[in-house]
Image (cartoon, rainbow, N blue to C red; front, side, top):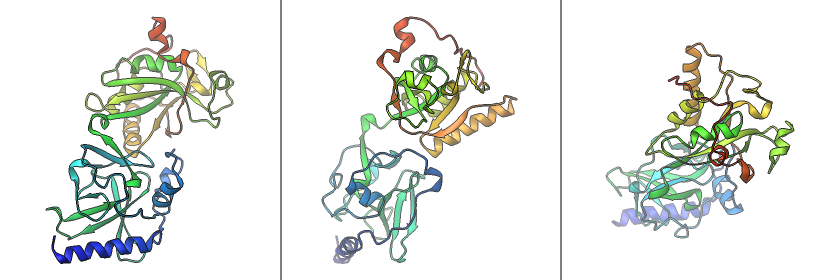
Length: 316
């Protein structure tokens, strides 16, 4: 490393430590205000929300060389691949590229640097620098470790999706048998009561919908495949429940966790509309999933029966 580069790095270090939270611009996408974010510690909030900087060489991932994916600490959106990480000796994790569309660049208010934030939720990540010559891409994303979580290679392909289509026993029945699905659980989402019980939800005053959590492997299936299965296993035109199950807890809804998931759901609603269906399915941002009592889990698998109000019908 030449002297000029070393001086540059020293300047960046001193500037970062001296500015702290000086560039507190509003970068959060207003479309995501209602989405559920992960809880943050006070120190995580100082950096991620108030745009602070962690001290150099103190971050968890400065020297991490494992293969995997770095995701946003606040919303779990994938940000960087380990293959794009390099050692710049600057004291913070450095990457010469991001996952396409994952990171947004915003000029600092002082005009001296360019901030980088999570494109999905607006969480502060750090700054990006161009022209330093560290790698052929000539780009350095200088990222706070505290702004990220690392997903090892063996787990990075596992995602979760949330669907409500009437009685969750029937919804889960079809998803748990689908290709690429690793695990399912039933519970409640979308309401205002914490830790709801099944009895409470049945009283129709909690605002919750009976929901199925689907954990799937993106190497063997896709979110798009799951959305298609969702529409093909229930009556998405019914407006007051599902089959004989009537009530607000039985309404049809897709809870999306990212803009991409929302776009895919909208795509298939549009396709169905073009086919002449009057789609009643709601789209809502995913919030806290409250798991239901144990006796509801994999209900038909244990009972050895089939759903009474969910039937598969090929549409797509």
